[in-house]
Amino acid sequence: MIEMELITVGMAPKGDGNVLVLRETHGERLLILGIGFAEASSIAMAAEEVPTPRPMTHDLMVNLINRLGGSLIRVVVHDMRDDTFIGQIEVDTENGILEIDARPSDSIALAVREHCPIYVSDMVLELAAVTQDMIGDDSEEFE
Image (tube, rainbow, N blue to C red; front, top):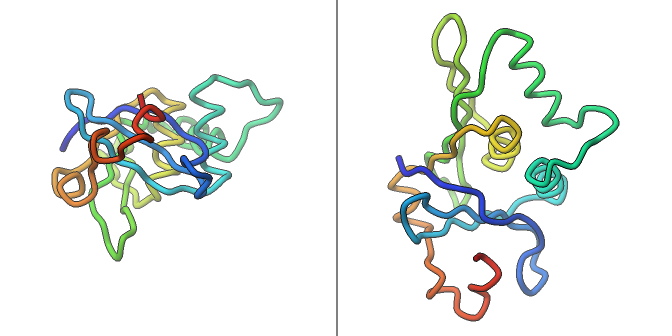
């Protein structure tokens, strides 16, 4: 597993939907994930610490985990199936660590709120990672 950091989230260069970009914490590879508008907004608001008058959906999920005595310890993008990234959240509970299937975008929305690490499997990076050189002129978008 390779630890990653959130670089940016928002509209894709050339306006092709919303993306989230992760970069290796100790490397140069990027993982670009297409995500929905709601998830992009949620991640961006959490990353920028924008206050909301009431809990948003991902805030509610964090509140539920914490109120039930758990704590989010990490999120993982561990597989690709039919060009779809597969993720999970790992929650520490009094009964051990629960691995819960989740979309990577939702997982990362939780990770940003809880300041917990984001990991991507070696296999996923081998299949899907790019470098700034590979994406050409758009590379400034992800610095």
